[in-house]
Image (cartoon, rainbow, N blue to C red; front, side):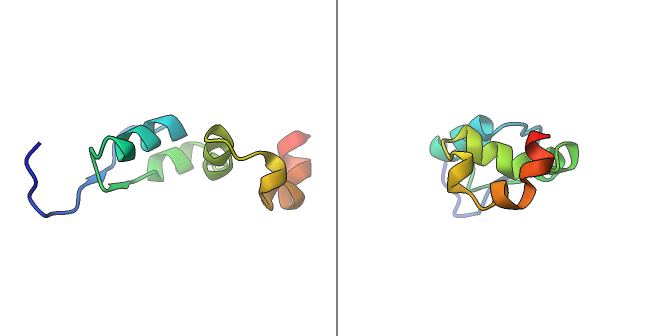
Length: 71
């Protein structure tokens, strides 16, 4: 891969934390656009955090949205 000095944003079909984490770790891009993922799942941020190892007790979201997430 040739380095150009330009920032690269990946913005296509990201639907899981694994995909975004892999793209960043492999240096395939500098930023990941998760706009479509958030439109498809408004709780994408919570689910992505959980998928990369954060437990609900580690996040303040559980206290704020516990009834909605677990009802």
